[in-house]
Image (cartoon, rainbow, N blue to C red; front, side, top):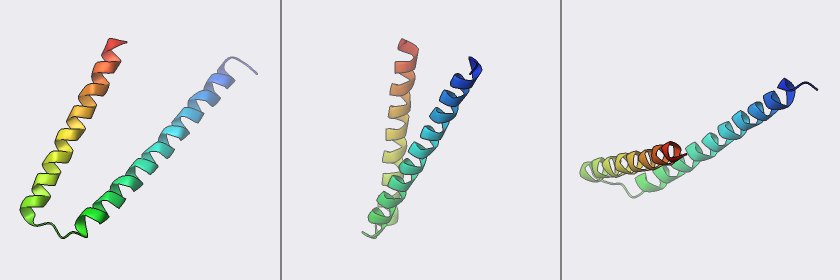
Length: 71
């Protein structure tokens, strides 16, 4: 095996693992949405939830960027 083959396999493996994690993440989000909409929120509550989720996403993204920049 050449130097490239193990690294290629490692890279491919990481890409597959990442895709699996994304699928699990998407599934979890859909399950949460279904549960949330079973409570029949009004329009104000829906907009509030969208804003809360957006703020949480931005916070987590900022934290991850900070950790990457620290390295």
